[in-house]
Image (cartoon, rainbow, N blue to C red; front, side, top):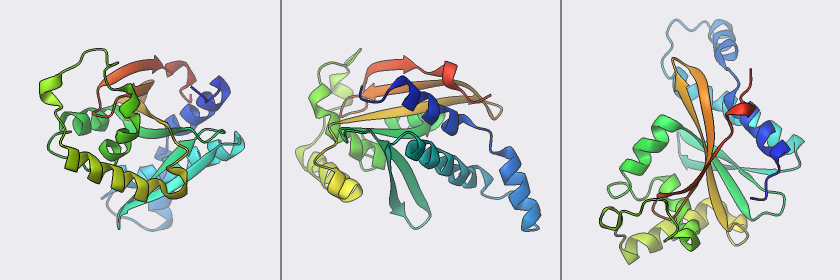
Length: 195
């Protein structure tokens, strides 16, 4: 892992800060009478905080547009070889459980970079993750499109996930997954949660 403990602490604090006040102020400032889209909108504040934390630590952040209504922020290590993505644990589990049916979700595409980790998973389930060469090639093409000039440098993808109960973050982990989303290593970062 090329991210220092200090880098991870700064990123986790940004990832787990409570955005409730910003959302309420935005609703008041704009005379919103409903809260439609608020969960998705909260990611704007979260990704903004992650970007600022990355820059403060001398890390590079990238903003990737996936659709007209969804962009995400990822952070690249100082040497450019590692990339961290950010997900709610609930969403991460859902995406990984649907890997075979939705191999072109951006997470599943980016994980193709972690092919070098295949065979090192904690519990391998071969029959669940038989991938087709044409699908892997398309995943790779999507990954190149997302990462652009950073593609050649990035060698490993990590996924930082937060578990929430009633909107409160209760745990955070850094997950190393192979190319089909199987867990290789999980590091507990709960001590870094923003208070």
